[in-house]
Image (cartoon, rainbow, N blue to C red; front, side):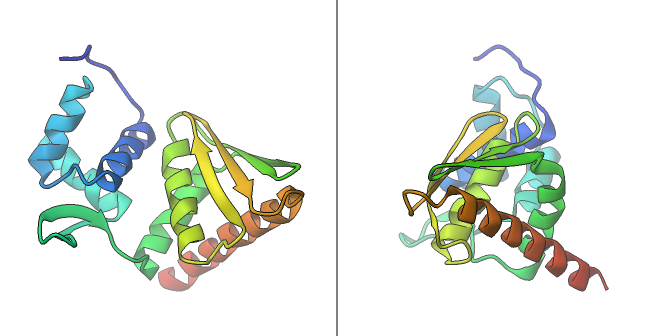
Length: 170
């Protein structure tokens, strides 16, 4: 077993997103075990809250297996993301065809995953891909000189998410 480690909630949830995206989480117990293998001790109740908070739902995949997965974004998931985006995006800087987004420690994976889904759904069509570290996301534009316009597109996406959150709240 790995050395017991302490992670921020955002960092732990970024790991949860990664595991769900890899198709590794078939039950809450699986998630507890996967985190334990990383030296992160959580209760099943914490695993349940983490899965709910990141928007993962249990259902049958294309092969008929029960596992946690992300379905198409709903207004509720968007509302959760906009809450997270207020806390996750500290700064954005564009250069060439890149945008560098700074997050608190452990927040980059969560943000990158959300941006990848937004790209795939066409909400942010100019993203070719993202690379996430611990506190930095590198977002790559499809256009060789499109960094500045992608930065504006990302800010607009985050603003729209924030507007949706306010509408859902009222």
